[in-house]
Amino acid sequence: MNPEWVRERCLSFPSATEHVIWGNDLTFKVAGKIFAHLVLDPAPVWLSFKTTPENFYALNERPNIIPAPYMARASYVALQTRDALAAEELASLLRESYDLVVARMPKKTRDALASGILVSTPVARKKARKKTRKEARKKPNKSPRKIHRAKRLQSRNRRKDAPPINENKRKSRNQAPRSRLPRRGY
Image (cartoon, rainbow, N blue to C red):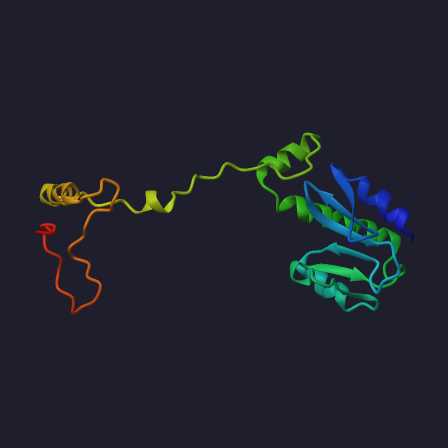
């Protein structure tokens, strides 16, 4: 088994694409999701692919098959040698990997793949618009008395662009409240 055989097998699946990432590694994706990873440079692992949880545990008990680094939590296994699996078994496991990835995609993307449309990234779902913080916090209605008081305080300010005076806020607890009328310098 050589990398060219794996490449031909993976690209034979509908809408499968190959991408060169991390230097000289081939990653096979369907609709932007990885289903197999082939390392071309000499490395401890030469091929990684997704399996079912049952196959994940069964394959890991075989020699030269380990949990894939960084991807084991998603049930990916890695082959350390090229003769770890027979060609027929590897072909069926690669197809299973492709099918598992497709099964986890949104229905629109699966339908597009089934109709033969080349999907490079998953079809976006419409998301409900999230409310902003301002929209989430509705301001309580002010009573007419509070509105009148705020307007009166604003009109007493000497400068037009100055913020309104808030009598309830003091600089410290010991400080007396400000007088309502501005001081005259007589």
